[in-house]
Length: 298
Length: 130
Image (cartoon, rainbow over all chains, first blue to last red):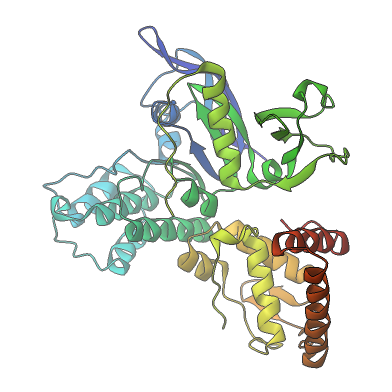
């Protein structure tokens, strides 16, 4: 299967700071990818590199097999919804759609008008008077109506209230079901991602911590608890992601493809949220950085 | 047509929740052979979940021989599950209560019993349902 997003040693430097460093990924088509990480981890940089709004400092990136924004045809295959779902405040919804049809060769006017109708929006209304949720839906409509193969969304729901967030994700999943489009979605709202994503990329401190199919990641990570013990005595195929110890007890989160045979451990499966938090706190433990906490909103 | 609900706090994988709800509906007679399951699109429009999750659940049900996908038409129930035997349930409940009373008399508290119960469930239904 072809990769929708493939990077090799990708990096982006601003002055002295690396916003993204040595990032190698290959994301297969047909997935809804959750890009998670704390603020400032490099999520937006990654997405802007993928759309071609930024050029890499090091390494390479290919989107649907080509360099981002390398040709009009390549641009037409990628839909992008930027952070805070911007729209032109003084233009009406109808004018937004009109502009979309002028700028995109494969524009599907039927999809666009039908969606606006379904959302119960008045085409004559100016974008500036829309609610946050409505504006997000307008931005999604514009991105979908160009009939992309890949949709990139940067924190589309972060500023929405819970109802608008749910409605937005419902719309997005309907689009996935109907058009079979691949999606990369950045967010720090783990409970939302858990519902919609089947592929996870955790980005912390400009580095990719873990990437893979959610079901495989959940199957290969386990929480072990038992009598206190030094993690270096574990079998070589068990990688410790997170550990905590009391004077008597050790609790570890390990990654392994093999079954855990040691009867001294109580083994429990982990949740999506455990997985994300473990990789995020791993970064903090090793670097002692006071990173903002991950929001968990249900 | 049935409608799915999700319990995010249950810790049960989403696709399994869907499978279990179809089982339940079959047992209760809410679904019968010939009935259509909601399309993936209808499910995701309501629950805001990944359509692949729905398809995975339906594939599982198809493998069990309970439903069949007809291309372009939808997924239909082809077989039902026998209802639960109420008498057996009642008998089991009374046996379980006696067992629990005996456990309490032996000095176990509800936490101990729950730990034992979980272990027993895991041993009996070895297929890890996480």
